[in-house]
Image 1 (cartoon, rainbow, N blue to C red):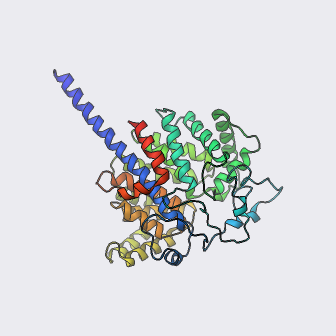
Image 2: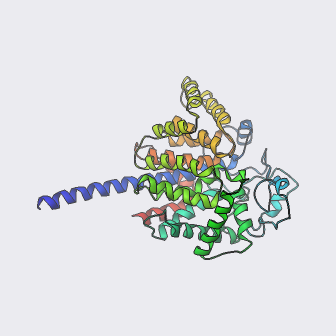
Image 3: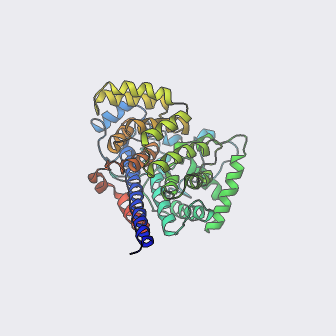
Length: 410
């Protein structure tokens, strides 16, 4: 073998090794995304953490089915015709989206006089919520479309086309809740009902332009639920440069969450996840993000307080719960992202611990958890800290999607 062949085969081997390492990072990110969402699902939007202990006989340590009653549900106040709460929808009465266009057999639960209906009634232990199902389907669409660059418009068109088909077809999932971004999208979609990928993309781009230039943006779209569907765009840009990965995520989120503040937050998160997929320190990425979010000083004081107590002690969990409660327990992106990066910093080498701490902090733990999980899973893959195998065995939706996605990545 001459020198050229020798050096070429050497570099080819290192590229293959690099590829399998990146693929492993993508794999763990997907599993951890699903695990964090599923662990949080039964206690999603529990704002009083004592309700978690009361309903589940202690802190959550694995996957559970939701209880019939939700202690702080405001599902019956949600607007079934668009985003936000019922009382907010002003002007002409729009037709219900819930029951007619999406969530076909669930309208009765939204209108229930019981007032304590669980947001995820119909799901079982190990299931994923609607947002993470949308994320898994987006990953599958991007992979099966064979896009070499997922920041291109055709990639967005393919994902949106599958999204429309998924949500408008009865019986495709069992979740009860769809957040404001879905209701708003389909309230506008139902006026012309575009179906081909190009028509849907044109509709979404036009809608986005209109909403992004509005003097009164819809604050309900500035929510951490913007992250699950952008995750596959970053994961499948793991081998591309950072700018391409960020662009893929930002250009897509403008179509689902057209709010002027969202692109900047998505960009902060995308840079951190892209770096972690390449083996960068999650702890350093979290610090960098927290500085951008003006939350670093606050996080450091909570971090020091937590360090006084033994790892996995109830006292330390209480500090994390206080931190998340202070930084942002609800869905609004800036606070939720600050909480996410605080937990990423504290659990940078412990995906399982981070996933459970996030769940037991309550609030908007599903979407915050999905994005936290992806970050911890990607980082953990480089240091031998994987999602527990028994969790992977119990994640029902993930088992249907992830092996197929990974096989097509080979």
